[in-house]
Image 1 (spheres, rainbow, N blue to C red):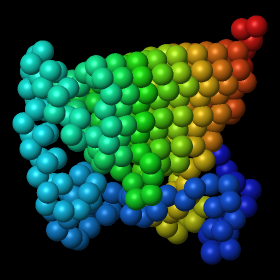
Image 2 (image 1 turned 30 degrees about the vertical axis):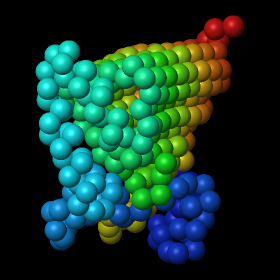
Image 3 (image 1 turned 90 degrees about the vertical axis):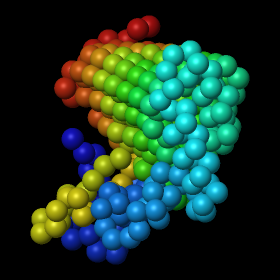
Image 4 (image 1 turned 60 degrees about the vertical axis):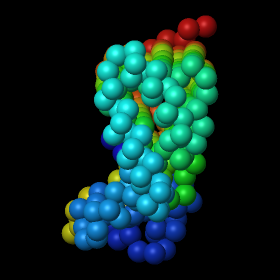
Length: 267
């Protein structure tokens, strides 16, 4: 399921790690969950992983806005979040609708365009030490329970992208979705990977890496499709339901299956 680099060997010494870095972005240990489960103050961990800014003022602003307005129901809640949540994010356009119980991490690295809808229970996680974060452009719809998760990577949703419910977009590099793309429910984009070459060490302790994912314009992803790291998908592509995409797909193609294969051209 992983794209294997030919330079990998059974022992990932410093020389081999350098070779991997030329093709992959290495995922740093500071983004892994062991940093949350290890030693350290709860306040420090919370500020670093959730708020994204150091300092008590940033913490207070985050806590006040999310605790006060996150669970406010009905049209009143949408109205109030539309007014006050703009003070959380780096930038928020006009006509943005925020649903209830949205989880927000590192909001200072999230840009939202005009007329965007983010449904209930979504996660906007721009976490990272050197990344730009999440950019959601005009007219995007994000269905309920969908997760946008950065692990020091970037996620860009171009204009009029429509994402169904219970999807996950995870990026440790760059994950770009082209404009007018339709994504059905339960679709998974995973722009990250693990090595597993060292047999005397658990996979969780081995090097994480990412090449990123790029999706062109006007695409359609069927329900439960999965797209793996390193894949480039052209314009006007259709990916069938439950397909597992681990190869590049040319423009105007229809691809189905596990693993996905091109079965015809739309031209």
